Image: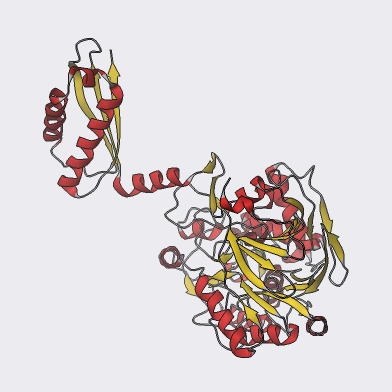
Length: 558
């Protein structure tokens, strides 16, 4: 039995918290909350691969702990519809034994799309919740709290447990001038603060940024000013498809500027249709045009709203930057407005994208030169406000890289010496009682890499792909007489991704020399020959050009 399997998750008087994603990293959020062996999951998200993760489409949390323990998952509670909070739900749903999924209308509409694509919508239990109305998920009674974020229908959670109330902020900012009509429910949170909150879990993403975050209303003003100033060519506004309220504002701005709007990108169309269906906004059909009509219109009468702000290789904007989009071409005089932030790690790819946009003759405007984007996450003063209003006994910073969690903990400690807090990482087991909050163990946690064509990719396979990309491949083939142990043909070479200006005759001579040194039994042992040919070939290439390629020996015994 592994040490973690001896942990007693039915211990009287204790709620256990086990983050399996989103703590110590950005993305892949999944928090397990347990009482008496029964659990809910708060969010179930994905992480997107970095450039070097060859062939990886998505990364989901490792739920070995849930699978191998005797914990029963009673529900998945989704705070909002961003992929790093909902994207793993469809992939893990069967393994989690089909628990009910709770969320607001827009969130569940997005989940429904993904589960339909994954083929498990027919047996999914989607339960719509409404802010201010309590619902029960397993042993917990939960009240959704309206918060503002960069996606519609976001919520925080007030969770009533047998030992006290826990507040989970969800991803939030305090936007008092939101253009969506949604408001951060400050009054409700302050009221909770009078009810002896046991624990606050709060968004740490922007804990290193001082002051208050920029309101979405200021972004609308900035976008309007920029778009109205553009007098020639097409305008393309690139933004996250999930930010449907900003999409709506851009459509209104385009209408005021006499431009028709084309939506570009599958997720852009999908999210727009969901928002329209739910009545989040209404757009007159006459304002919209199909993509195939764009190039036939006066460019000064067109505005395109596109996905691809992070230079995703299959996105609409990326394809346009390569002049490879089937319907829309960027031309001299066009303007691309990048209404987004750079996700850390994507800087190089985005720089490459922008260079290609300029090669098409477009001008690029980003948030460095104009106020056309705002973060959806709270800055330090908003984080302080959340702490002051809730007055928690214990504090647990979540949703952020480790340094962000530490900074958020420091903010809490400086604000009030009474609050007791800890910083955790994925896999840590935290025990919460009425009088204590402490780490008591660690369970398996990590990442599962998904190739949507091939299924799960274990880390060894991913390492192999990286090595192939970095060092190349050499196939060494030879034919050996299985009776006499003599070499009949070869060795011959097939080289991919390696500098082939090495002395292949020298390598052949080295392999033949080593072959002759082997005993007769070893020459007849294909496994032994494989290992020797692999070792000699890797060593030869390393001496020749400093790389150790992946070597595949093909020894044919005849």
